[in-house]
Picture (cartoon, rainbow over the protein chains, first blue to last red):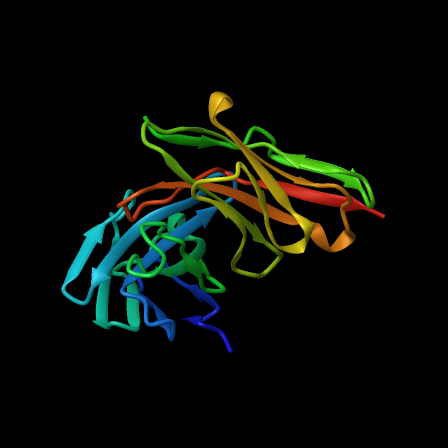
Length: 116
Length: 113
């Protein structure tokens, strides 16, 4: 069973549409993250959340918003999708209270988003 | 500025040959170092991690990595590559008390039969 799940796995949409990507985890971790992956650029952090009431911008948050509905759920929204948001999106979790300050992150399988 | 460099974008090796993937970092604090592998269509799987202690770290799937503070490097190695190792490999750096990973840009490994 997957510990970090993402839905949908693939999505094709049109410019200007609002899109929501969802992430759920059964690991009981308090911290959750959204990254995007682009060829040749590695993974870049969009938003992160330390708990339900704590949401923070990452390095590339423009054009995105997030919602932490519960400890286990963290959604990423594209309010008005544009073609350069075509990418592979990953959700990740971590738990600093376990094993010290190592911040090991656990990744979901990714959502491939195409904006036409 | 903090950064992680993976100088090789693509590497091709023959099955059974040895492998070394390079990772260099620039980080002011004591780093925590990670190697992840991404198989086609899959998410990222942790291969190994270094926090402290022995600088030679063993991971899953027969991989190992060596932390060399003097060279600011954390290179990934495998003595004999299998066709199933074809994937993209990411080096990442974090530090104590912080949420943040800094990822390298990845190295794509191709394995020839």
